[in-house]
Length: 225
Image (tube, rainbow, N blue to C red; front, side, top):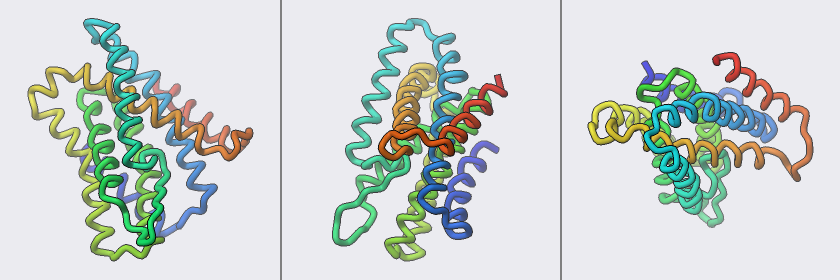
């Protein structure tokens, strides 16, 4: 069931664009909610689980920092697509292949910690993927990408997280080092979620709408403790 939910989250994001076509404010609020929810689930659920299973907490901490640095490197290619911003400075306005590959690597990594974790991790990834799919679909639509190419892009992106989940369940090496891998993914999640929260506010001014959706995201996580 987790595979279908992960795949359908991208489909839902695409449908939101074609059915609702949210404006810039709505997209930012959706991103803020997803960032708050992802950050809360990471801190309240995934982080304690990893340290509880850790045989060396110092190594675990280093792996978390490594995840932050890895995501920093990925974003040099993705230009921030993982947290809802696709900036393309070219005359063709085509989706750059390195940007898309980086986005897919990130989506793949999101599927890895879902194996043997509680449902909160699954839903945190789903909530994160929906606005990213919205932004990706909106970009493809705005730049008049052919329907065939858009479907291919979205399909590849949609299968990445289910693929990560599948391999984490089937490959013994990934299972053996599951806790260490999850520590790295925590670093990735921490980087992305905090950047989303900072970038979704213009000029770093207090915004009651943003603050409200952030509180909702945090409270939903606390309710599952």
